[in-house]
Every structure is written in C-alpha cells, then in structure tokens.
Amino acid sequence: MLIFVHGMLSNADVWHPVIDFFNERGFSCRAVNLREGLNLRKARIRDYVDKVKAMVTENDIVIGHSMGGLIVQKLAEETDIKGGVAICSAAPKGVKFRGGIVLASAKYAPRVIMGKPFKEDYKYVKKYMLVGVKEEDARSIYEKLEKESALVTYELGMNRIAVDENKVNCPLLFIATKDDRLCAPELVKRIAEKYNAEYRLYKGCHHFFYNDSWRDIAEGIYDFITKL
Image (cartoon, rainbow, N blue to C red; front, side):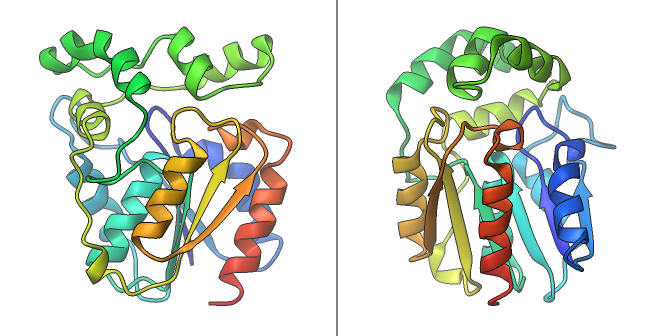
C-alpha cells in the first residue's frame, strides 16, 4: 500500500489527485490526517510519527510532503518499510536551512511560547510556499490551510528532529521543486546526500499539488516505486 503523509498546515485532502493517479495504476492508497484526534496544544512531531508508524507494514511505501517528508525519514529509521518518497522535505537535525527563513519566522515566537495552534500569515505563505502561484489562486489555497501545533512548528523551525541515517535501510527518493523557498532545492539535495539517496528536481513551488507539474512528479514517483 502507498501511505500519503501531508505537511504542516495541510491535511489529507491535498493528496486526492495524486491518489487518483496511483489508484488508476492499480495501487491501494491511504492518506493520513495527522492532526485528527490529537490535542494540538500538546501535539509534537513524535505524535505524528507514531500515528503513521502504527499504520505501516514492511510492504508499504510512505510518501510525504514537507513535514511529511521528515516523517518519512523517521519511519525509514524506525521501521522496515519497503521504501519512502519525500517531496519538498523538511530538514532533519544537522541539515541547516536558509537563515532568512528563521528570521522571517521569528515574529511567530510569541505564539509558540503561548502554545496555541496557529498558521502563518498570507504574506509568509505566499513568499515561501506559493512562489509563482497567481494571487487569486494563492488566496484560495491559503484559506484551505489549517492551524498547526505550536510545538510542531517550533520543532520544525528549530531543526530539532534527529534521524540516524545509519539505521535507514530502505530506498528513499527526495524530490525538490525549483521555486520552493521553504525547502529549497539545495536543502533537499543535502538531505538526500545524508542517506546517499536518489534526488530529483522538478518545476513548481513548495505546494506542488497546485502546480501544473504535479503529474510529472507523480510520474517520477511511479517510476521509482515500480522498481522497488
């Protein structure tokens, strides 16, 4: 089975077109809603990892976007999944990202301290996640995004989640998009190098679901997983 894991601020619904793509090619698919049933004032990345970990078997391939890509890395470290695909992946501890993003995120520190779930403002999301997306479409996408756990936001932003690459034994594919400013191509490439994993670059922005090139990415994933 293919298990799909969404990113921060997102939900399982974003995977619908991708799941349809793989269903048409004979794959059984399941998309996880990470925040469902959790107390977002207390939820951490560990809770999200454990939720997906409870679902997977050694025959499953896990496909994650952004934060979901980091969860793929944790599952590859802790379980015997068949393989993993990380799209525009968040970075594990030790793989540093651009300082500008950290500075831009600093204004959210009070919300993190308060522990209240929140989502970044439109200007931040447009600048880093929706580069090249038309204004009208970007506004519509932003309205669909959901509040995230402040603790999860902190853990991701401060690069707190460690992964031991020596414990990863399954094949991994890392995918980057050219216009992604949140998880930039050079960052994703460094993550792939940590695992000696395959790396591919496509057109589009961070939220690849809304790019015209999403099908090209799906084709690339299909090519990778059919060889496992």
